[in-house]
Image (cartoon, rainbow, N blue to C red; front, side, top):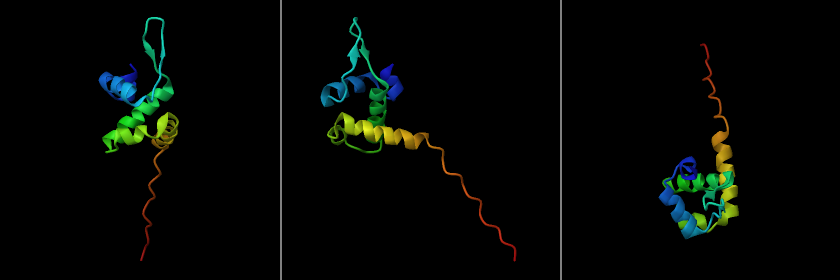
Length: 93
């Protein structure tokens, strides 16, 4: 479910979790991982940046808190309403 919410595959999620040590999800008694909303946001941000050409190792070098700050700014920009288009000025001659 976490991978789906972040827009990545479960394989990517596990790989990024192991390779870059950016996430440390809690676990249920049954061993299931529990990802926070911040984890999902970081994963979605990494996915988007990667799709735009960023190198994941460079993103990961920012650390979890750096990525979380960047991800929050990114999410805020996405949630902001688009600026209203201004109507062209009409003049009469």
